Length: 438
Ligand code: UDX
Image: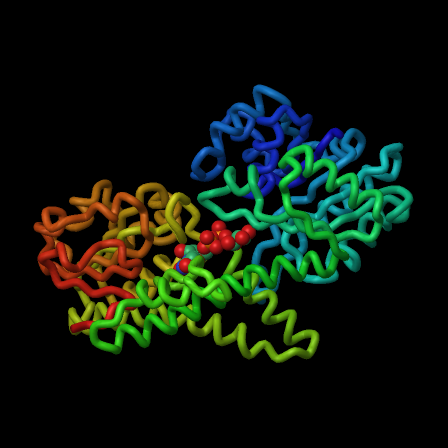
């Protein structure tokens, strides 16, 4: 089958790189020429482990990059829609890119003899594939779904920092569609790609779309739950949140994953998807009390970190504060909805002097704060004369910090929001999210 991928963001580019690296004939398309140029020159658009080497391999084998949607529609049997569905000003998802792509697919389909299967991988609220995307393609192509094309919802669950491994080995493939033949063709494609052990879940389009939101909402709920418990631990002398997580995580009904207390969840998915499902829920008349509490708990985490700093420094005004880690998670340079950005904004409002360090994300942060903060080129520069250091992102390099590194701080105050250091080994004042003081 000739495969087409429309939209070369995190999901589209990873998928195209994996398919191409395996020799599957694939055309990747994006309307952004700058993006296309960079990809053709074998450069990934963002930092992501393994992606660039897979991209290189794919381009040397069977991945073709194009800006021409017509080429995809006229040549491909399987067309994956992986365009972004970012947050709009109201907080709800912005469907303009996916609507635009759907119309363009329809226009190209009008005079085509192919009957492609269009697979919606982008995250969209339940009902969108059937009630928005399908009619747009039908109107523009003047062809009916089932006759001129098929449509399937197939949400994606990959994690940033892990995109290649997750694309190579997903925990589940969810396929939502009403036409048995096209569902089976897509299953066959994935079985060939992933082997016979791959788990499938087949359902209708709206349930498939709902699974994606339920998945991300549940992950956010787990994080806010453990963050809430961690706040309790912080107020109970001697308690340790990681041991609590370990203890409850052994219960198979709970599980240990996503129970790491920290500064709250960030990124391009969890905050956006939670806000969207909250608004969607209200729109259809279901009061989203639980999910709102999850969101509020997440917002509280950053305020708590500020309180910890203020408790020790009394006032943060004119104090030199070091922030270690700017990306929303380790192994990524993505700063979308990063809690570090929120923390910097609050501290700047309180007139602190901020110096930041990150192995990969500094350039992205410079675009936001320009000369309002200082960007350190090394850890020693970041810590020099600092009155407080806050570890925000658990990059590996920060796990190796020791007494020597903190030597040149003006006040040796370490706030570890991810508990990656051990209090026992440190000759500093050490505070952490989720650890009760003695
Ligand atoms: C998420 C989903 O995991 C993925 O399935 C979906 O396809 C996209 O959204 P991602 O945004 O890449 O993936 O990051 P994830 O690993 O889920 O982490 C999200 C945020 O939660 C990060 O800020 C992370 O640091 C935080 N987190 C995660 C915690 O604070 N504690 C945890 O235990 C786990």
